[in-house]
Amino acid sequence: MAKAAPACGAMLAMLLGACSLAPPLKTPEIPIALAYKEFGSWTEALPADALPRDSWWTLYGTPELDQLEQRLIAGNPTLAAALANYAAAKALSDQARAGLFPTLTANASVSRARESEHAPLIGPTTPRYYNDDLLGGSVSYELDLWGRIRNEVVAGNANAAASAADLENARLSLTAQLVDDYVQLRSLDRESAILDDTVKAYARAHSITEQRHGAGISPGLDVAQAETQLDAARSQASQLLSQRALMEHAIAALIGVSASTFSINPALVDIKLPQIPSGLPATLLQRRPDIAAAQRRMIAANANIGVARAAYFPSLTLGAQGGFESNSFSNWLSAPSTYWAIGPNVLFSVFDAGLRRAQVAQARAEFDASADNYRGTVIAAFQQVEDSLAALNHDGDAAREERAAVAAAQHALDLSMALYVQGAADYLTVVTSQTALLTAQLQALNLDTLQLTSSVDLIRALGGGWEDSREPLTARR
Image 1 (cartoon, helix red, strand yellow):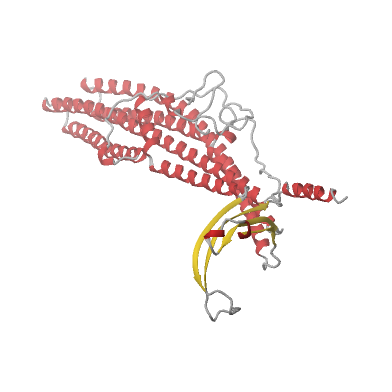
Image 2 (cartoon, helix red, strand yellow):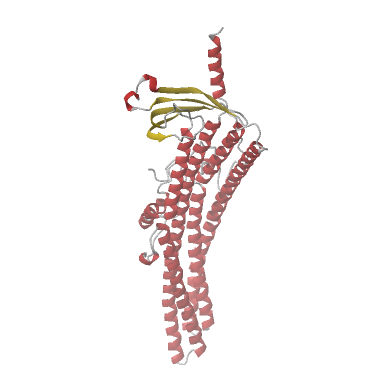
């Protein structure tokens, strides 16, 4: 019977060691539709926030953009700061994990001391001068009876994982912003080319009006109207230079270089519009790094409830120390100079004026906030996908119709100019046709640009791309 007592005690300690006061994790319910409203159906997917996101921008088929993205990843200061934050969170996680293991310490000292003659308990035989040479060590280990340390480890790991997701989210946001800016820059180049062609056409028209006015065929009003159109087009072309410079400076800041030393030569670059797979997969909840970060912070907050609740119970620490201590080197490391002490230490807070209760209430409130943040992040994510799909669908239809409008406007201008030369129409008809053509050309360009930026928004909303069952559209590591 006496032998059974230690065994029962060991079993009880093991059972207590497996105890955790963190409540079961309850993920907030989020209503999820069976299909995207704007595009096709989707199915459930396994957790996939670790799927590769590298080089999704290659979908746009622009080598110059690829090079800029690589420079951003290497030199962007915001991304570097996010990486440092992740390293700090990982270090905090490692600190929490250290509590699972015993703490070993060693100490040594060699000293010469003199006692005061007026010190209490000093007798006539007490030496006034003596040496104290010590070499020892200690070990302590806190039994995690209530799961406080384990919950701290869970919280630390979850926070580190959330910080890693923050790093991925920063990377995704910055690379997407660079694609956006590059698309806008090249759109400005195309707009500049349209305006340059328009200025040349308006200059030819102005020359015709001057010739006709010189021949007494057309009034001076025609010349004035032609000059107005020509000067307005030249002004628009000049304004574009300012907008392009600002966009170039924004790209310089993203890749981490001085705007004073950076430039991108104007060019007409064909940027491909990525083809969306016939059915978008349901990787949204699992793939988006911001959703993963919100979920892991919810896990950490839940574990912190267990940490706070463990404070209601006593902490038990096992400790031992020992070593050698002597007043002389000659017998320092001998058996009579040894000392040791061993025993448990129990610490329990009897009265704290409601401190622990407030700490548990704080932990629960922080969990509720993290759960609501998670729910809000998911809802916003689905909105962003729907917004991007709607823009792609409707702007695509509008772009096709606008290209037809450009062709019609060009035909109308050719007819009105021919009638004007023949004297069958006044120059106001030509001016109206010129304005209609330029407006249609710029609107068509704007719709093409909107489609590209909407595709970037969709990729960002889906967490860095999509995967088609027939052909992977995102580049692999």
